[in-house]
Length: 545
Image 1: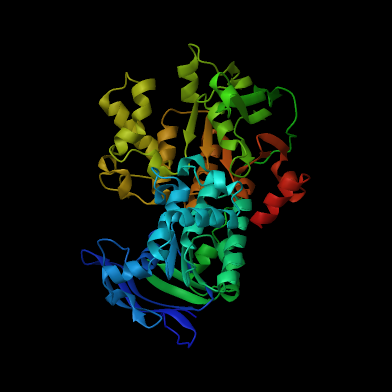
Image 2 (image 1 turned 120 degrees about the vertical axis):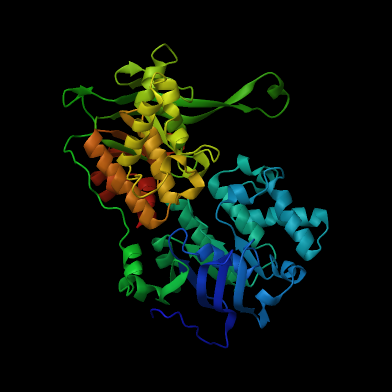
């Protein structure tokens, strides 16, 4: 069914929103959405960043702060939009719960995760502190967190991304709600963890009989989980219907664009084997590691810890060679050691073994500064990696302060504009672009700023740490196309850290598969993805299909 967005009527309706409109200072960002969720159903709300899907969910619970919300939103006969704040507070968490998109920001960093779950139980179910704590540990155990009694005493930053997401699920389900609003519950998680989180939600839904509204831009997630889908664009529902039907035969041009947003392979391929001599095409590897290991000190329990520290090995004897104008993909689940490997390759983490950049050892000697200009990084989340207090000319040109301080103001301005042009951000499209701040750009545009910031020093190697995981599907495809084009025109080499097999398939020439700090499989990307040998690689490939 396509627009206009019409609401159906069912005796099994749990929540029914009619003509839902959300505005800020008179500007409408959600423009008349109709939504029905039946008891025990799974509905997906899909769209790009800025489409209004998260605001729609927040407005159901009265959490769209600063917004004017009109229309009707009935939950079991009660219009949520007409309820007072105390009345809404009684519904939040107990009858309608929400899993927020980023658990690291949603969880309080000053309290242990066990205390935060227990607090919900004390407030909503009037449990005594000791009983609430025991129940919190049980909930964490039910969500699959190993050593739950120990992990409950951990702070959010001491847990992995998958564990933090499980804590959020335990908190949301603590009071057995009738409706769960899941806002991007698997964003930035690797493929195997995504599967685990979906299986977890599936199990809890079957056990509690609750309904789930899934807010996401991940169409694979929608296909494998939801039964009904609504597609939002610029505050409007442009298409809705059965998931299989909409995905197989989308009617609206926007839905077609989302369905076809899988990154396409567009790189100069090579027939060379991954193993070979030190020389590739007459040139040395731009980056080469031999038996690279990274160790962290860890405390020892008991009196022995008074005098000694233990040692945790995060990366164990990794070897690779990165050729000019090629991409080496490193893939693995959270905790596999891939990000630690990236830090070592950037010279930001002490390591054992050999690491060479442009034929020179990556050390802290006199050549370190010149080598740093040749190896730059693009981080996962452009919003947190770019200072909100610096404008574009300051952000993009910051590296010139260290590596080219002799440049005049005009030369610096010219270099910044050139780097912005390379990533498709021009003064013609964005008036006064140099004076703008990061919050004035979309997620995809911010990632382009981050890439321009790296390119301004004319590097030979870019370390790409999950460069697309925080972006919606269309922005992901655009950023991948940009990186592919830059590699062809500038001869860049990429060390690509990612959990997204679609990005690996589109960009990588060779791939390393890491698990528990060890490379379990490596080789040409076509060979590894089409015929994986290691059981873990087989699991990753299956989970991404």
